[in-house]
Each structure stands twice: as structure tokens, then as C-alpha cells.
Amino acid sequence: MAFFGLPLIFVILAYVIIYFIAEPIITPVSSVFDMITGDTIPDFSQTQNTNDILEISNIADQANIISSAEIKIPRNGDVYATLTIDGAGVNTSVYYGDDNAILRKGVGQYTGSMLPGFGSTTLLGGHVNTYFKGLKNVKVGDVININTTYGAYEYTVTNLKVVDYQDKTAYDLAAAYDNLILYTCYPFGTLGFTAQRYFVYAELTSGPKVKYTTDK
Amino acid sequence: MKKIIATITIVMLVVLSVLSASAATQINTDEQKVLDALSGSITTSDGSVTIPDSYINQVKQYLLAKEIDATEATTILAKINEAKTVTKTVPGTSFTKVYDNMTSATKNNVIGIAQDAADVAGATLTVNATAKTVTIADSEAGTFVFDLNAIKKTGVSGNAVMAGIASVLLLGAVSYVIFASRKIALGK
Image 1: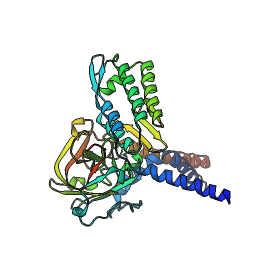
Image 2: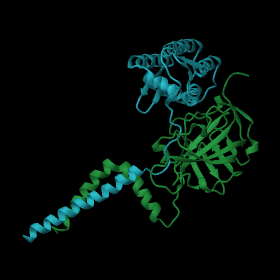
Image 3: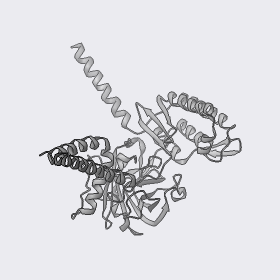
Image 4: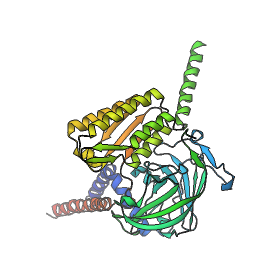
């Protein structure tokens, strides 16, 4: 008992103390362990309330133009859309905001980019080993569907590129047309910090335009 | 009875204010003037710079969640011009470099002007110089964090992995030391 009990009690006590201090560090470790040893495909389906997201069976049935006064602007941390890329295995919730807490739960929109339909760039980031795991399967010509709380949008992939994460020419936040940029870390299998990002560029092919100024 | 009516009225007002706060608006003519002033060039001592597009987009989204009238817009425009006057004496070829080149007194002055402008709109502005973020907290429109860092870390952190492995190894090492010392003590 002396040889076994005391060390075991110490280990348990130390683990409990360190767990509360180091939980943000331990979580990714356990995720990595699961990724290495798991023999089943992990389920990243969302459990958040997505009741406000529109279920539109025919995208063409939507109004062409909607007013921003009719929609609810999401707040930081709100789930405001779902994103699917059939054939690439991407099916995830989209949050407004992209801090660490959000990226652990889904794909996050950079708040310095505009919402879909607002006539500019929508920039979405997601973790390479979870919600954007399927991004590597995306090809030019693939269709991306984003169903928001105010309309359903369809984009067509036009380009794929690997760029340094500090390269500001990889995205244009002042673009005067609706476009979508998805990104995740690159190379895909790398653990730890990577200096590169895998960018998927897409242009809007269908979805309501949001009129958000009172100018005619 | 009067108390019940008063309570119900208060509850309804609170509910309605919450509901109205979450609905979007459109950017009116006065708010567009504010956006135009922010989008224009800012003269520095050795050229001119512009406010990053990400900040402009975030201001747009803030104004979509918030209604500003003509009087408030006029005051905010005056504050923007006041800040632009200050930056005329500061060198810099980009927005962040202009901020970095400011003396502490100038930074405090510009931040104070920005806080006054936010105050006009009924919001509180705070600056995190380390993270290079600006936060606007508005009881009506919500909290907006203006962040220049567009591309986030989207992989598994290497530092987190190393720290986690180190924690496990440390636990194992300490357990072994205790086990071994007890064994030695008993062996004596």
C-alpha cells in the first residue's frame, strides 16, 4: 500500500490541481491523442441551437434583395449560418467572430469582413483537424452552401492557394463584390504552429443581396 | 394592482428594448458621412495613410446594429477631424506605424478623442495596445472587438502539445521519485 497508495494519491491530487490550471493546454493534447489512436470518424456535428437558420429547399425562391432592417445582425459568438461543401465532407456551423473559443466549436467569421450578401468579402477560418478537415478535398468548381438566418447563399470555388499567414494580399476586405474565402492551416497533417494557410476562394452564384444603406 | 401594472410595464419595456436592440437597421445618410470620413485618407507628417478596411467594415456592422442621428453624427465627425489634425504631426507609412510612432501623450490624446466619439454614441471604447484591438461596448448594439489580425491560428498549437506532454512527464517523474524514495527508506 505504501509503495502504491501514496504515489497514486499524489498523482491524482497533482493531476486535479494541474488540470484546473492547465486545462486549456491539456484539451488539445487529448484531441491529438484521439486523432492518433481513434479508429472511428469523429462526429463534429453541432449541438448548438441553429433553429434560426433558414431551411430553404429552393434557393431560387428567395427574394433577390432584402433590407438589412429585416435581419438580425449576429453578435460575437452567435451561430448565424451553416456551411456545407458536398463531396468534401465539410458540414459545420458558422459563428460570428473567430477567437479561440469560437474556433474550438466551429468555423468563425473574421468580424473585419462582411456577412454574406453584403457585397464584399466574407472571411471564414476553421481548424485543420476538425471543422475544416475536409477543406483539402475541395476542388475548383465545387459548390459551397451557406445557409444563414436571413438567406441561403451558394458560392462556386474559383481558386485554391497556399499563402503565408501574414500575406495581406491573400484577401481583399474592401472588395466590391460578394465573395467567400475559407482558410485553414497548411500543411494539413502538421502539429503545432504553421506559417502557411490553405485558402479556398469562391464567388457568389446565388443568394439575396442585402441592401444596408438608405441611399437609392 | 398599481404595483402589478407597473411591474408588467417594466418587464415589457425591458423585453421590447432587448428585441429592438437585436434588430438591424440600415446605414442612414448621417452614418454614411461618418463612414466616408473614416474611409478617407489621413495626412501624416510624411505622407498619408488610411484606416484599415477591417476597421471600416467593423464600424459598418456596428452602425447596422445602432442608430445614430444627425446631431450625434456631426459631433462624431468633429472628433474624427480633431484626431486627423493630431496625426498630421506624426510620421508613418501605414496606420499601425503611425500609431507606433506616436508619443505616449499623443496616443492618450487620440484615444481620448476616440473615447469621446464613442461616448456620443452611448458606447464605451477601450484600447488594448498589446493585442492591438479596440473594443466598443454598447448596451444597445452589443460588444464589437476591432481586431487587425485577420488570419488566426487554425492548427493544433505546438506549444500546447509540448506543455501537455511536459505535464504528464513531470507527473510520472515525481511519482517515480516518491516511489523510489519510499522503497529505499523501507529497504534501510
